[in-house]
Amino acid sequence: MLYTEGKARIECSKSTFLNPKMAGLRDLSVLFVRALGGDDKSLLDATAATGIRGIRYGLEAGIKRITLIDINKGACRDAKVNLKRNGVKAALVNDSVQGYANRGNGPFDIIDLDPFGSPVPYLYDIMKLCHGDTALMVTATDTAVLCGAHAAACLKQYGARPLHNELCKEAGTRILLGFIARAAAQFNFGISVHLSISNMHYMRVFLSLRKGAKEAVESVKQTGFAASCRECRFFAASKGTVPCLPQRCGECGAEMERAGPMWLGNLYNKSIVSRMLSAKAGITDNLAEQLSLIVKEPDTPFFYSMPAITRALGIGSVSPGLVIRLLKRRGYDAAPTQFLAEGIKTDAKLGAIVRAVKESGRAEAQ
Image (cartoon, rainbow, N blue to C red; front, side):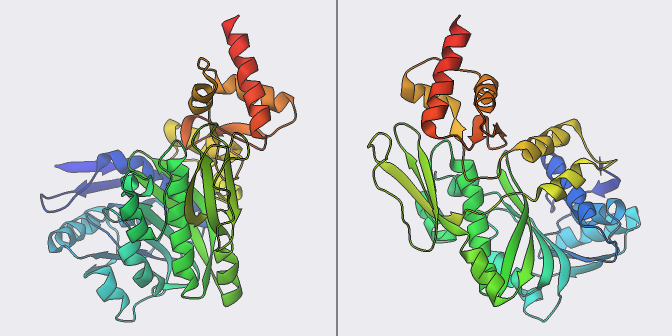
């Protein structure tokens, strides 16, 4: 049975996994590779499975120098069949990422790492396959760990304490980026983040490396710690290797839930995201909506959840759209966020947000 996605036709045996629900993420990845430009780039799919991503990069992004790796022999058999079926030429290697990296292969211009679970066991070896301008696409599907349901596992795997509240998806994405920044720094690489996505059961980050000790240090300086009030939903973030955050909330005096280390720099390069959005092909309605949301979203750490704030105030639900309009009318930057359907990113302080929420509640009650 053949599966069709984009321009690719893929055959999948019982020994190989292919998730049709991840088609949108693969669409996004193709758009990103196209936005980078240059069909002369070399690309490594480090967890190839059926070969669908590498094949789509060849067919839809014009990449001609493709290498596919998978440790599973059955996956390599399927990938070989699929490469031939789609007329895509690629080097196909039956090996682990660790084995391949430690035999002096690479470097590559673009690397796609999409493992089952956490990418952490692969990242140090991936760095050995990079040069000073390599673009990385990294997926984590251990979202329960990154979002705080298994805090001990997050500490063990990522060396970080997560947030287990309404901010968890953004915090988890930032913990993933923070780990990548620290791993890259050990190889004298800094990072430039282009796009960060949290959706369904995965987080996916798109970034480029920058070579040099100075760049590595500057990236590590973009990491830090965050704190979230358990009562009034106030939050704070502070860059630095030493946490400089209060134990008690400065707004209401309640205990703060603290987390980190994590990336506190930007999550988006809106120029690249805009180029992806303006693509003539490969944009579904859902993908266009998601990218449009990101283009408008203020690129600052964390957001306010309207349900969490109304619960703290003891009032009924309010329209996030109305709160956003009120904040904009008062001169603040405010927009929805991809991380929570009823979340708002804004430069307004908590007091201004509470006033806008209460006013919205009164307007909706009339």
